[in-house]
Image 1 (tube, rainbow, N blue to C red):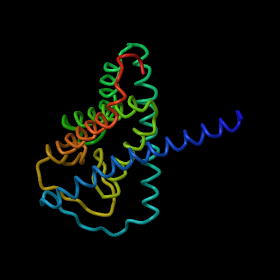
Image 2 (image 1 turned 60 degrees about the vertical axis):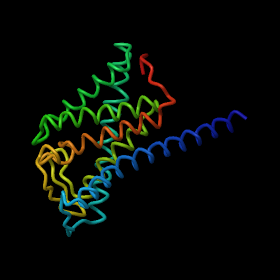
Image 3 (image 1 turned 90 degrees about the vertical axis):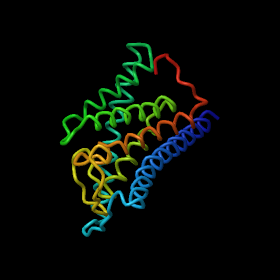
Length: 215
């Protein structure tokens, strides 16, 4: 009976992890996709199909995105957020501190701006919220990897680096709005998008109130 109970527990755990990852991945990737389509419909950007995007390149982007997203989520949420909470005994302070450090960690990226700092800070809060609300890495990991993968597959500049994607994207608004050379994450549009996702997470997981106790 104990073996059956353990097997059932593992199945439920795996199912829950997969569903949380899928939820996060769809939320992150669809948000980016909707924003790009919306701006294209309002003539705020131009999409030009490119040649040379191969299956091999897709899997290269996929593996790189998964590796980076998992590493950052484990470092900044599972380790840093958790242990700041243990030391200072307050989850709100932990979330703010871990998010500031997360944003500072991106300062070395080329074309980094104040808007990029704010965007990454809100991104940190967004991922922290996903972790705190679910008590595991899978939702923020899915959210982070979906958000990043959508950008590189579409051909958007991300964190100051260019990627060969399905399209060449030309933005028509000023840098402060669409990120300029830093990419999507360095503009007001991304800041609004992250606020939307944060609000969504707080609404969907509102039944799990955040305690001020350690994570």
